[in-house]
View: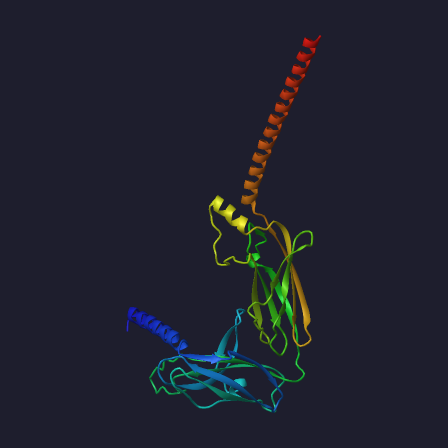
Length: 339
């Protein structure tokens, strides 16, 4: 098979997979989408998952389980089937029959081994319309699964340690002409369980007056053990589209700076807590917002306004002096006639 045919086949499979994914995502809904649970070694936990068949025909769904870890610093989960770990502790009904437009709640059991070490364990319970291992040799089974994340904490003496590796503006840009100002921080988890930072970024001007307070974890994201995660923050006006490009024309930028105005030197103070003891982490960065195009227009308008004001004052003074002269002249003329 030549390269062109291979490329076309690959693209066709990708497009077909996307269409299957989109169709299946609308066919089945799971709730809840995430469990955050804890238990002791040797304990069996029972959780409830509700499956909703939103399709217009009857269907049967089959469960499968996989461990997951974070990919890079984005926090995106990567699922891996394994022979150990949380995914092997989970059991559920082998299949779930769902008539069209109905829902069913099933029980999922998690049997924590007696030998399980204290700490965090992470997996997902998936449901798809193709039975596991149903494809024979040489066959390709295309199936889309939808899953619920399971975040388990096995109780015990768990080390909790985290630190902020970096807190800065995006691309280390410290001079801006208008809002928004994009920032980020990178948090490293050196503990044995997931760490979810809670707190805010306080923006203060050069006089120490608070200009804004921003949630430091808007996505409610976790940092898994031995992982680093990057969290993004933006100081922006309430209705600002953060993906909007700053216009290039001078007067367009003036208008943009007027609607997204900030001026001066600012400090961004990050303060978050994590873990069962709410240990605190802090970091700080600074930046400037100088809307110079808008300032040029304001200065020009100010000079023009001052010139007009001075001209009006001079004209008014001349008018007053002229009136005074006329009044004096009339008074003098009237006195001479009386003599």
